[in-house]
Image (cartoon, rainbow, N blue to C red; front, side, top):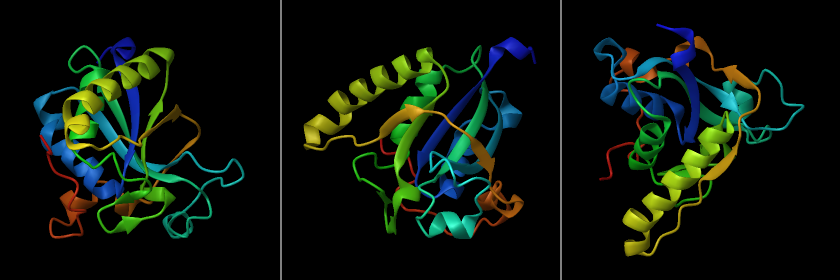
Length: 177
């Protein structure tokens, strides 16, 4: 892998177990579809909420989102394609909620890492809004915000649904179109 072809994408779309699971299901690392590495963790919260743990994030006091950090090869998959897949696999029209999971940690958010990612995120959001949500009278409420500090979640959360196939999965984490 050449260092300059890899880039990082960070998405929040509800319970991070399901977000990681569906990305890896459709972009398996072993099949070279562009995803090189994933990690679930916490980001986007209060500046003083450093090194948060799962229990603290679940209280809602940190404002951190449960998120997925993807290292990808932009020679194989574009950032725009990953953003569109992100929208396909959850409900971006509910504020701070996916299915029965409610709270700021379950918000829909794109944490961009460069001006190019910001531009692509805005463009794809607009396209998805027009094509999939305007016809049904819904509005995307996904936050598009700069990426900040990242903390990996505890080891047992990493690839949780691969380790625990019958574990909890939010019903919104499926292909919607």
